[in-house]
Length: 283
Image 1: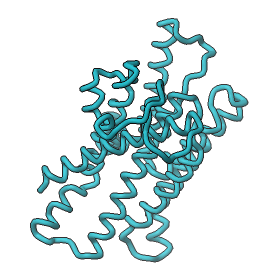
Image 2 (image 1 turned 120 degrees about the vertical axis):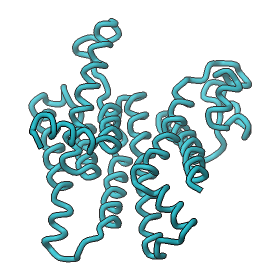
Image 3 (image 1 turned 45 degrees about the horizontal axis):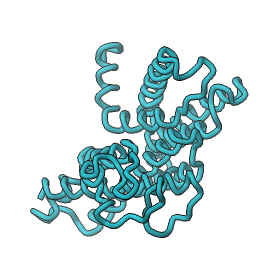
Image 4 (image 1 turned 180 degrees about the vertical axis):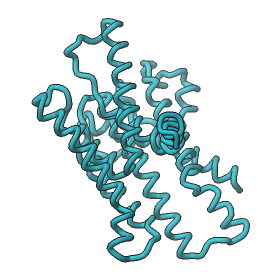
């Protein structure tokens, strides 16, 4: 049962990765989100066997069946990435183990099962939004504000559904305090950079992503996410400059690095912070 759920999540992630690719392209070119998929080069409508995630791209050697023009490698990459992230979220959240135990031993109440499913669906939808935001920013340099706001709402729903404490002021404050703190710190820091540079160092969309990060990750995970984003962004920017593909004043989309930082912190934040506390703080 465990392996079956694992495989199902991976395949589901592949399919949603294909959906993310299609939606990003339609948003970029201003197409309606209806109708059959088509080749972006020759506009030929695609049949179902042209749309099998990853496998169609490999089988067609990365080219359109009809016009034989190259299909970007980012399509299978996004599909695979989404599949692996879905599996990772299933393992990290404990969903796969809990749902496997439910079917094997019926150890979860119906109410507990509903809460488990709702919270996990929220996590999957949030992951889809993260990938779409990163992909669109990487390709166009613009942040999808509407998707960021949707992700903020989903994150709040996830926090509310996941809350299991007492319904009193003290318990609620202790639960939501890290998320409020991280939102103020991350959003405030990015706004300060934006204000000082008058938008030259940081875009307004990055402020929105920072607020989203704070609400989703909480403190101290958001600090690990920001550190990861700035380090990887700086390394990437340095490589681009050294490779003469960008000047010192060239704008590099920062959204993908922020999203990568979110996933890094979500999956490895506890381990990283524990290691840091043990080595540098002696805790």
